[in-house]
Length: 369
Image 1 (spheres, helix red, strand yellow):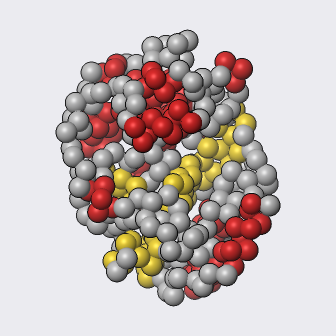
Image 2 (cartoon, rainbow, N blue to C red):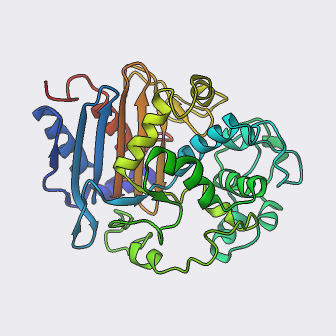
């Protein structure tokens, strides 16, 4: 019922996107991209399609903030794509012998491993305590006291709190701030400009706002986030840095493309680590989609969306919906960032993401010959 009402309200809104700018798709592909952005009432964003042979298609559309057009280089808060990004670094740290996926993180009243946190099988829930913790900057142990459910151990239960605790564990284990760890072990080696603090990123930072109601203020206000103090960024604070790894990474589509390529072929990570991240550890298909969970990585097997098996992640917060997925067999990848788009869904993935995946991994609409 709630979804039906949302869709009815969405249909009353006029489309915001009038045109798209960029190149790389066939004329048919460009027409379909514009149609779906208008159909899902997108406010603005970017789309990157690429393959491992160097072919690319890049488009931008709408606004990053009121009065500021979205560009290829626009920086976005990536929401849950941050989990995928964190996962790449964790696997690198394991290859370097710094940590193990099986060791007890020591953050919880009972034994909880990194593997459990990264596969959402640790029995941790995002309840009222987690939401209060975000707004009140409560310590991690206080939040966890009422956020754990032993009956869920081993079963899939998507948890932002559990994912955020990975950042706290890395700080405890390496005795460095999460931001420094990610810079030193991931971003700098791959030549990616990114930060888990909006105050630190260079370039124009996009807002995020909900399509409904159309008069709502930005849930993620880029200007306000830029002005927040930077007092604890470079110092470890595991008790309170559980609010980063699950959703706070900020970067451009180009940076996300570089990170996705690191997941698509051996180089930064070994073939063994890539296979381990993709291996299904839990099933969570909901609605019409067939999804399973790897290590901070989704697997999608749905012939109605793509012929081959896709890997990646969705991000969704404050009205913005993002997606980064790739096809292992064809070597094709897709990055989509938005400032706001329809959040309607019939499964775990938003309808807009499903439509973008169909477009991106279709042989008919990919690149011009």
